[in-house]
Length: 513
Image 1 (cartoon, rainbow, N blue to C red):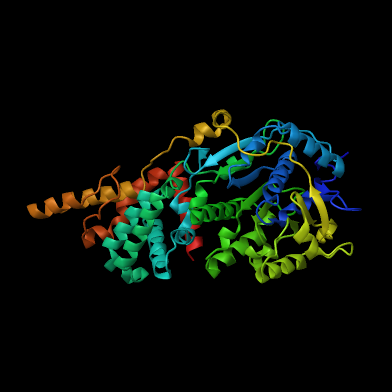
Image 2 (tube, rainbow, N blue to C red):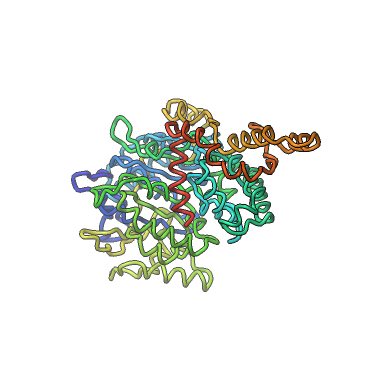
């Protein structure tokens, strides 16, 4: 009988015994960073396969990040085998495939953009950059150009974009100074600025503004081991997030981009340093412009040298562009239904991605495998694609399904991430600095009494809702804006705000070009 992980051989057991003489299937950890695909129709067992692979990676000392889109992965934090009927079924399958079944729980950290079912997970507009923000908001090319200008000016003037109100205030400022800025950066149409502000209001109504702020997520907190050496499984609560699919896809793409940009090169490691599961992966590519698809393909191609294993989970391999699908070396294909001509074409295309096995027809096997059964192919020695095999996926060791609120709350309370992320911070950044600039402009040149009253009416204060437009500044004050914010910027450089600003400058310039 076998264990699910053999560190001496560098393998994890995936399944076997699906048909006579089927070869047991093992994933070589050395080639796990060549990425993977879990595909299949609804109800064919993709989520269970995702959980079993996450368990295996954790047992091998590899941290995991995954999104719980249906709320039924949280059970991985509890030992399995609680239901007698399920325990008997799993024991029977384990005996069939030759596996030692040792029910156990796994170390878990829960995350949630809204901070309800997990610790708040945040980033800043500066870290996300104009390209991904434009995709998140669904901007046109002209509006994306204005967004790039806003980020460039913020970078050059030392205005840290740390939360939603910073970005809104920055857009107000460039709209008020569009004539002067347009001579250097290009046309800034008031209609484009207004359209972006409206999209930000829509995002705010969806709760997306909670994604932006501090303390921002540090990648080191996703790459942790517990005291026993198991990799911590980071679970993003995504049931509510799936109601805003663009926000879901953009957030996960941002996280992949940050991993790609921040992690050092590790060459060809014996095992990945992080396994990243992208459930509902088709959302990543729906309506994505060619430039964004090219970025995803580049990240998928190069991030494996950073030791990150990406697993795309979707209904059909045709959901993934060929340029990205070509980077995937490990495949677990659950059943595909072929009721229409389009489905039949997708079935044939899926079968063509496998190295043929003379023992059976691959397309026929993909169409007729049962629930919990799959056609698999994993990279073998020297990275050679393995022959297609029809196997039973091993049963999970942890519990299947959701967990109670009390159990979730207990796990969150015991997590060290609670003290670090649960309380939101609001440091001095673009919103506050622009408010001070408006105040200074009003005091330096108040003008007639009527102008002073108008200035007071137009002024926005820190802590208010969406800011009004600041008063138009004189050319003398515009020329000295760098001096105005120089001292404030210097104060920030030794703080978390300053670090985010520097990272934002580099990130936004790279992403914007």
